[in-house]
Amino acid sequence: MNQTTSMAGGADADRRFIDCNGFRVHYQMFGDGRPPFIVLLHGSFLSIRSWRDVMRPLADGATVVAFDRPAFGRTSRPVPTRKNGARYSPEAQSDLVAALMTKLGIDRAVLVGNSTGGTLALLTALRHPERVQGLVLVGAMIYSGYATSEVPSFMKPFMKAMTPVFSRLMKVVITRLYDRNIRGFWHVRERLSDATLAAFRQDLMIGDWSRGFWELFLETHHLHLDRRLKSLSVPALVVTGEHDLTVRVEESLRLVRELPGAELQVIPDCAHLPQEEQPDAFVRIVNAFVRKLS
Image (cartoon, rainbow, N blue to C red; front, side, top):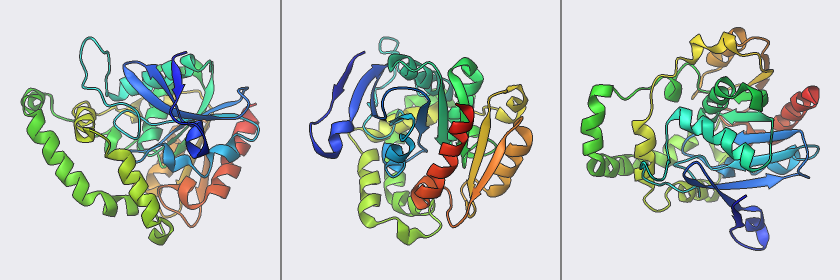
């Protein structure tokens, strides 16, 4: 295992890095290293920070791993080349989850994915079912957004050729809209402090961050997950915030109907990020689900 601790002491003592599938992946691990294992996948524009209030409580009786997805947080953002093997497609990201588990000595895990992290958790279960003990899909984008967006193939050569221009334009747009969009993930926006919002912004805007996000954007395509749900036999829990406007509650209800054997939990008084607005309720629900699988 090729890993290093980034800093000694304080909160940074739990930060580690590991080389995996062309990325230098930033991750944190809590617990005693024994099963059950829980892997946390955050949503777009956020980072490992989104799990800060639930990682340690979830590790009471489990081993918990959270990592910064490619293009976000402290994970590296290499420009893909044939030599480095780094890829930003949804399929490559799901393969990264499985490869990271292998490097960390995890055979099977419960994947907990929020928003686009839920998209990738489900895709990982489809591509690597033997590695997934269960799924917790929290405001998961299955029927909209990242899972259904697509860059037209005929446009890709032009867009790639114009990468310097488009990545700079994307940087301007995201920078201007970032605070408003992130606050929109909350039901009670005052719960997101200015300091936490600034920290999320800092997590995203590291180095040539817009180039990494542009590479991810170029690889976006329709995953047609709705056609593939019935092939899954993995135990699943669908979680939605009562006031989620990013992935509307109706989409989570549809997911429960179409995903075989799925259970539903609606968490009141929160929106797209239950782990942020209602961490105690979130931990209770996830722990109960994991215990049933053990």
